[in-house]
Length: 86
Image 1 (tube, rainbow, N blue to C red):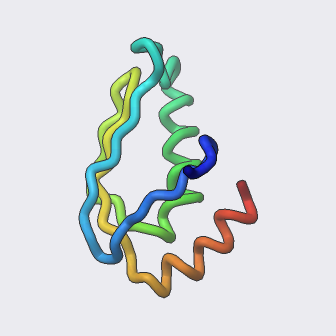
Image 2 (tube, one colour):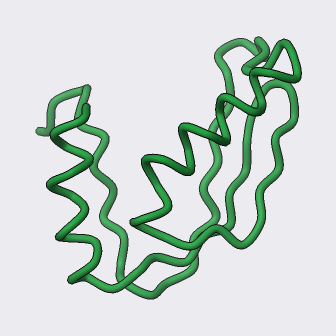
């Protein structure tokens, strides 16, 4: 059984995915406008090399992303970079 902190997702290359997550107990993820900007900045920094984002929605207590994964070669190259930064 994988460790609880294992955040690995089995994503197929060049495939569309709807990714979403929400806060616990309907709490807010975003309290101020600057929280949205911070989320998008970090999201772009860590995820743009893995997939293309077609659209997103950021309500106060959750988020939705419509993405298309990049090729395996691109993903494998960038996996090393993101694992080093975590």
